[in-house]
Amino acid sequence: MAQKAQIVGKVEYRSGDGPNVEIRPGPVEVTIAVNDATLSWTDEETHGSAAIPLTDFNRYVAEGLIKLEN
Image (cartoon, rainbow, N blue to C red; front, side):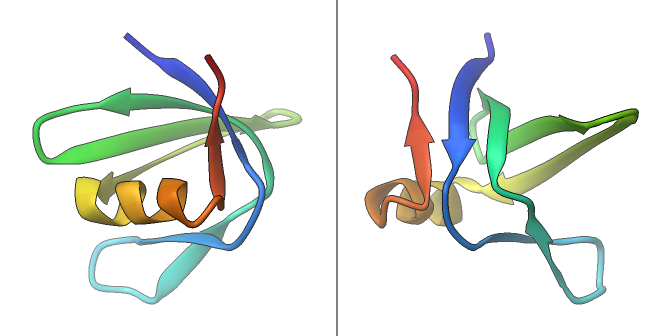
């Protein structure tokens, strides 16, 4: 089940073997799996998603860069 969150700082993910890509600040939905967290968002007519390792996700939350909504 997806949880609502806000990106409020610099949050990045790696797309394949390419460079890190920054997720724009704003609302996202987070789905937690065993090894990763998938963040999904919408920018006007564009939809995006990124899977990041749970260790990175937990660090972003602990640093206050991702704020989970209750």
